[in-house]
Length: 361
Image (cartoon, rainbow, N blue to C red; front, side, top):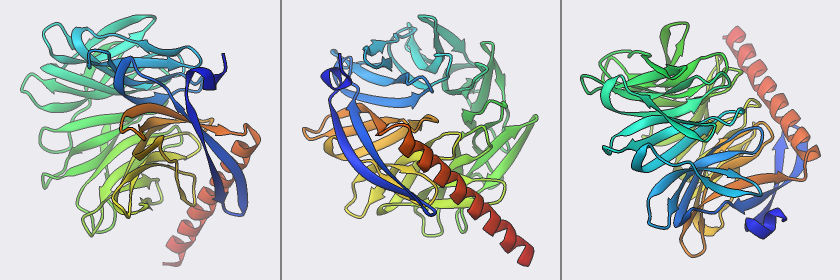
């Protein structure tokens, strides 16, 4: 069965320009389907093209889902309760997120080998897993016995508290293959600040110029970190943190943008506001933010991207339903290779320019 027979798709043409390289690249927008209901959202995709997220069942409960083309959606189930969602998947096919228990509590959950494992908490009632790395180490948050949200890492299924910066609040959203975790913690003034947990230390990452808060949403194996941060004007913008700088990705003409995924090539995905107030999924390739479009509706958002350039998220249909989607780049692989080379060139030039400016200052 061809992909288009089971998964409806739309082709959007885009020219991605990186430095002096221009690669003609099309995106095939594939509706991944649901579990019988009208809603779905894809959160992550691994290098094998396995996708995880959540979708409504025919009785309108959201369940964690794994999509494998051309097999379609598979219900990952819960921990005995009514609902679950999967947020991340590694190349071994292990997925994490949360699932409700028989008591209705939401616990961090690991789906592996056709089973759902309750990852537990730090002594409180609730927890959620947000990312899993190649080693199988998981990060997220858990309620403590005192009822506070604390960033948590699960190693071999056992939870450990990553700690806080000030106060009693922190959440981990991402972890790379070197076990460097990123997220958000409470700053000394009570605001949210993006942080990195590395070598048993918690390191603040700063904000955009003039801003007052930030949150780190992901990290790749090269140490590039994606942020949400406010600007001096009070807008929220997607940004990229490196050891040299924090770079504002901007918007599509509106006020806000949000980054959710970054691959090892430095490509960032998320969604951004347009001048008309609609929100559109984007991929940032180095020099520009590209609009990925929708399924005929007004809104879309991208949440995950693998190193092949495959992107997943959600998009609105012409009838107003929200569906889990895959933006699949075509043709492959020539255009993707040019796209990647251009992105890396642009990143190196930007870093070189930054270092030159530092030396001359």
